[in-house]
Image (cartoon, rainbow, N blue to C red; front, top):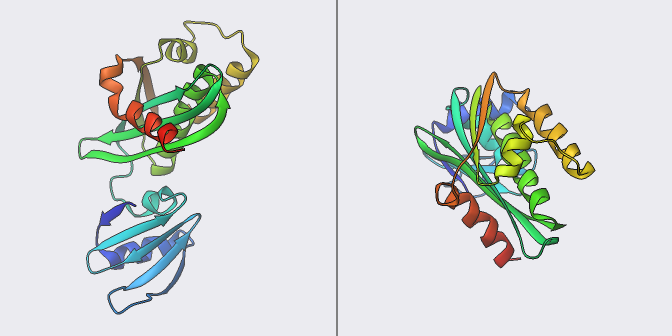
Length: 198
């Protein structure tokens, strides 16, 4: 679960402004609890501990590094093609890893899993409010389909590409590039861990 070091009083104001429900803490050490979307933040002296199925519902409101540029890494994993599939993604700024996530996505092809991972990281970056994103993935096919260098014959992948371009409109500027797997190792590890632990 994410831990955000911050001014918890300022965080409370930001969460209230965003429409979060604020209630008293459950113990003498808890300043308050805030519920927003699918996440709950528990406030202590100088930090928030975020719980719930979608921590970024709160992280995106509280973190003060919104705006600016982020580097996004994505990877899909598949056991069989099609087969059980998962996604992994990472958001990195000059401050280090801001957020990362992984999930199983049911049965999919490798290319569908790659697109699902790209959609997940773009949604997260949009929720965090970044202005510019530099996207990196180790699927040359997906990267070249998104840039338009390759056409898309598969109707499912065409829908994914449309969704990706809809998400990209949330940013002032973006680039996407193919990188070797070793550069994308954290996203790859997250995707494979999700399958291993399913």
